[in-house]
Image 1 (cartoon, helix red, strand yellow):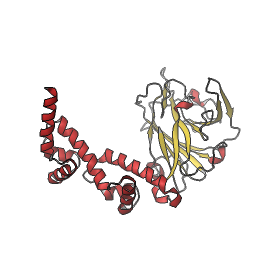
Image 2: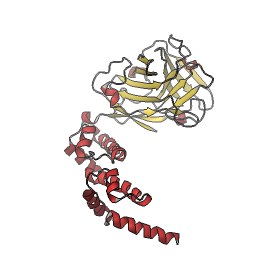
Image 3: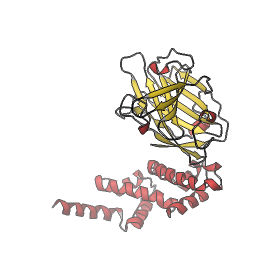
Image 4: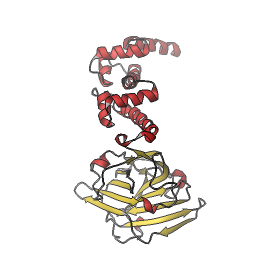
Length: 337
């Protein structure tokens, strides 16, 4: 698992509200059952951001009822409802930071030494330097946890603050220990057992910058992430007839011309070609597996006009959709015989 931790330029006020503009732009990770990897009905989403002073962590949690009574620093919060992060700033998988925050905004801050053979030593931080806040919404049955970890708390990283492209290791967890017999253990990277201290299951936390903030030394990192993000965005939105180069520019906070230039320099293809290629691949699947008409399929894959769909389909395959369907049926029939 790889998480792209975006850098922010605006000051982030820690008040428990994850609906701020900065958080809305951050990628969310859905936590799943740490043993089975199955999604849980009490949805939990974790997000990360950073600036030159802090690593920011946010959790959005649905709940049925809350079990939290502890309010002191470094109490055994893990015995009740709590969210947690483990951060390995030098990626050695043996020394890492553990921070927990419960729905009452109590904090636990440990440094962990793990010999990877079953022995774990925990060293509690004397002073609480974590800035945290929690908002509970009893009507919506949700709570949000937001906290800022000063980079001065990390002592083994190669550079503090991190540089663009630095990679740390991490995992995020939730213990949903409500007043029932079945405790829920959730993780963004499942460990396969009810034990969060499995460093081999840590994911990568990649420090990157917002596209609008990047300067010349960071351009290669910018291009890598933008190309990856664009392809994913197109795959998730190809059916939208409004998907075009201008929409992508707005999404990635770059002018359409500059975004097109970056994408073509990295892939050799235009953004329009990328959009149509993904749409055409999706249409092939529908032509192969359904009896829908060409007109119906064109609309399902994002084309307002069937003629445009046929034109792009023929340009990429050398066949019209109708010819492709007939040829494919003949080939399948030959194979069956």
